[in-house]
Length: 477
Image 1: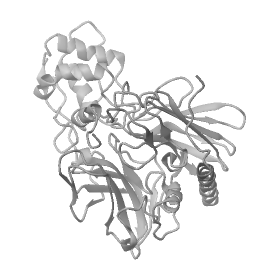
Image 2 (image 1 turned 135 degrees about the vertical axis):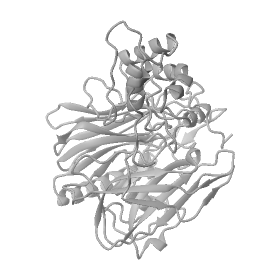
Image 3 (image 1 turned 180 degrees about the vertical axis):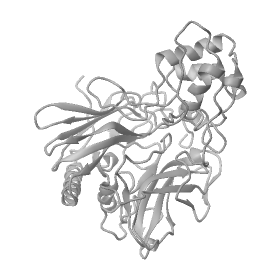
Image 4 (image 1 turned 135 degrees about the horizontal axis):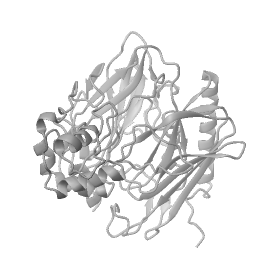
């Protein structure tokens, strides 16, 4: 049972993302009673929201680049869009919560238009006037990269057995410092890759990286102290500087994005890239030898991002211990900012049992700002959400996170049958959970203060856990 992916996740690998492409063809939605046609109405909608992934060489299992492509899948498209399964977008747009850029969500009018078109027999219209399918400069969603790296060796993933962790060094050792503004990853064993985290490490120390470290204690995007750190609390503490990867990460369902304008992560001179891969056997032998695309800033950035993760280390010290049959298990954590920051984005991470996660900021004057609310967490669609307009959070702001888990058969993503007790762990069918605010401090000194404070917060949680008092809480009945 351990290596059987839940049915819902298997479907996710077959029904992949419709992704918004803001610079693509504009959508023209019919506003009169005329029957919509592919040429006038449907083609612009599909080309804007779907074709970036539904094309050769991308993650989607079929193309949507022509009338015949779309007509063949028309009824299916209506079904998955009506359920809001496609385009995949899990951040709630509700009062009190921030708006995000690049929102992938079709309007009610667009959904109605799709259904009307399918019900009418999917008329082509005047194809001479149809927009041309979008063209792409490369196989990468963000365009031609500045550097493409391939994993130096093939990693064999057995059909059965425990999850694998592999730290892979990609030699670069460039003479000058550079700044990374985006990283994309194309795994060859997409179904088996639980996550990939990207770190920088000095070229003369990367040989010290071990396969089974929890996280490599390398440069961690400029915040780490260097040197190898093994598993356990030391590796956990180092992870606070990265919270997801020093210069980026990949998880199922993530949409590659450039950092906001003026933001990039440092890539010091004479550094190599270290990729941590978490691989989950799925019942069939596979091989992983993916590629990374790196995009460098043209000029030195004004700022870089710091991850404020609550609870820290993906809930390592939050005492996650979910009884079998518990439908409303809660983990709560709060953290007070010791310095001013500007907030640029947010993300969450958990495994299959999580159902809801919410992060809220309470400012010193008592006002609140909702940072992210996902009321239907789905491991297969983990994304980073960047705010439409970055905003300021002053020193003394309290960041609070609540994550709810459902360990019952009613959870459609339940991986265990029969259900069983689930605790924090690194295996895919263990659990973890946190939310991460992507922010920038006003000065480098403030950045050091923030990292020191986050480490202290983690150590306090770890001490409580070791004393036997740290555990997730069940709500009053």
